Length: 168
Image (tube, rainbow, N blue to C red):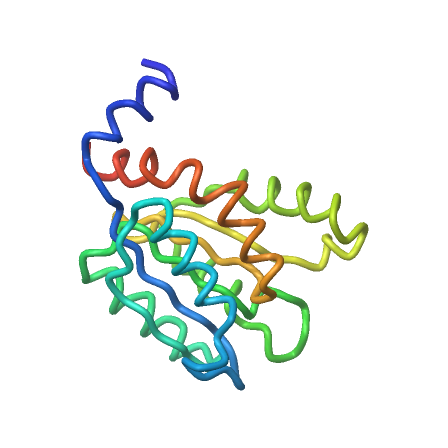
């Protein structure tokens, strides 16, 4: 069975439940543009947002959100923010250590597509994805353009397929 067959079977599973985590020391629900973009794009694609949280870029807050949402109904957990190389950017490190399996293609493709938009600065992104407790976890940069790129080009085109793979 090929990927297209999997996608067709996945359609029968219906909307994918998604949790959103914005990692930021300054964002509030009112100023969380990137979280709003994830929500809008996911809902427009027919998926359900089942959880949402803003956390500071602190190891314990990131892992607590990951653990909490992995116990819930979300099959996809999308983190945005904290993937750069700055002193406060810890999200990648926390998530990468926690993953049961990695999906290195996500980060590779994200950086390739990002390179087309921002040039060599794309190498500073530590976008990553993988499986954690039977959930697909994505971690993207927090800029609105990066979130839109990840959602439109990578996550949403495969969301149903990914969600189906976890329950088949």
